[in-house]
Amino acid sequence: MGGEVPEPRRLSRALSFGCGAVPEEALHLVFCYVDDPRDREAASLVCRRWHRIDALSRKHVTVGFCYAVEPARLLARFPRLESLALKGRPRAAMYGLIPEDFGAYAAPWVAQLAAPLDCLKALHLRRMTVTDQDIAMLVRARGHMLQVLKLDKCSGFSTDALRLVARSCRSLRTLFLEECTIADEGSEWLHELAVNNSVLVSLNFYMTELKVEPADLELLAKNCKSLISLKMSECDLSDLIGFLQTSKALQEFAGGAFFEVGEYTNYEKVKFPPRLCFLGGLTFMGKNEMPVIFPYSAMLKKLDLQYTFLTTEDHCQLIAKCPNLLVLEVRNVIGDRGLEVVGDTCKKLRRLRIERGDDDPGQEEQGGVSQIGLTAVAVGCRELEYIAAYVSDITNGALESIGTFCKNLYDFRLVLLDKQKKITDLPLDNGVRALLRNCTKLRRFAFYLRPGGLSDVGLGYIGLHSGNIQYMLLGNVGESDSGLIQFAMGCTKLRKLELRSCCFSERALAVAVLQMPSLRYIWVQGYRASQTGQDLMLMARPYWNIEFAPPCPESAYRVMADGQPCVDTYAQVLAYYSLAGRRPDCPQWLVTLHPA
Image 1 (tube, rainbow, N blue to C red):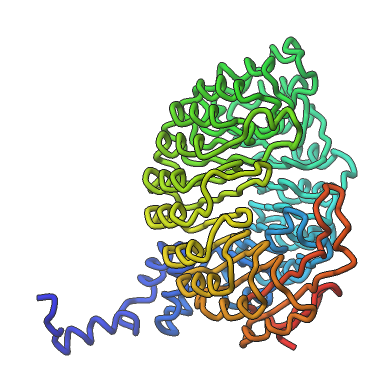
Image 2: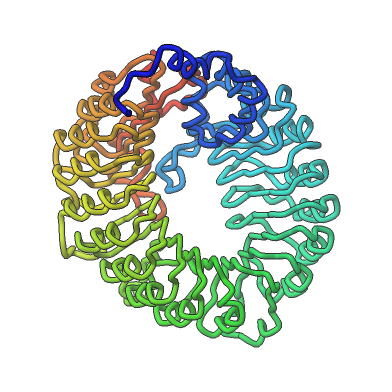
């Protein structure tokens, strides 16, 4: 039975599995089916043989922070990599909270990639500084094999480098440049791509300032019959009629704009490809232009309306015609009424993103999103896996509803705006407890509130019920240091933590870090900081880098162009595990506390 002790012979045979009994070829085959990096990591620790097989069979690696390991060390560990993803500047850089000269230069990585990796076919760089020289070096070494090049929210390069990529990387199937800052030296790069590449599947230069010629897009569509996804910078839809007619295989399109607002006759001839199922961008689209997409609405699986001029009523009218949506991205102008329509219509919805709208009186009159809309979505869209929402009001009951009905959630992010003077139901302790207890599949969780939004008790609930959450962002939570310590004691699997605008002391932050055994990275802005960061040294230990940006009193009364406080007004802490030691390119405004 289950309680019997195995016979010695059987026990030895069971233990021999990892020690030579299984042929090497069989182990290689088994390892090829293990994709989760955590499972790979665990398997590599079984014995030296498994460690070696993991090294030789690992095809993809994601480096969560580019300073966590030296390039040479990583490439020596995994010599047969086919795909590498690198993340650079902290996520806060996307919101202007990190100065431009932070670092995260691609040059050291590209220099190493240029020689030893014979199998490398895909490279993904995120929030990094990439120069034309870096791209040229990469193309010279790997251009003949490169199939995927993703530069995601990167900066520092120009279209001259893109022209070189287009000429040399003729096997390229994916070119991703979304939200990159690119110096525009002309649109020849797109013409070169259209002439030299016949296998391109996906091209993305969405949310960039690049100008292109519609004729080059038509040529691309003619030569690349495999093109199924194009996300581009703003271009009037009336200029893309020829491209859309030629792209018979196109399934995803974003970037079209309605520059002639209110002139529907200019767009009557716009016909989307028959297989189209994702539509985004649609900049400046208003009520008069909506009929352009009505014929395709029932086929759409993804719809992005963030940059349209639609009112709440317009959202209601359009979404009611889209019953097959899996992904919906909107601004909070959709309002509670719009979300009620989503709940009634979009029963298959998997991902919902509600961004903050413009701070103008017209948008404010639309009412924003509250617990009413979120509850309607939770009840109606029970297949949801991802929710990210800016809300004007929220209650414990709404969070409980999400926990009750959305059992498949793996990513939940909520930001409570500060426009409304009074919030219905604070603190949100019981609501967040119910949500976390019921949504056991959650892996990523963000909860950015306003003062009083979550007590120490609620913060303790987050720690207690964090389960398998690996990434967390918290803002304006807790009341004291004891709440933070209670939270930390429960976060046994948390790997990445970001904190903003909290009341915690420096000493409490250091003690909390020591309570989280799986933590690999923490970024904090806005806490009770000292001028030297001396108490942060309590968390010092081998392979743990601590970088500190002291508060700048001179910036206390200065604001940036968007009206927000200057980046250096508040102290910042960045601490992370690193096998590379102290980084050599630390800017002057950032003090390296450890290693000394």
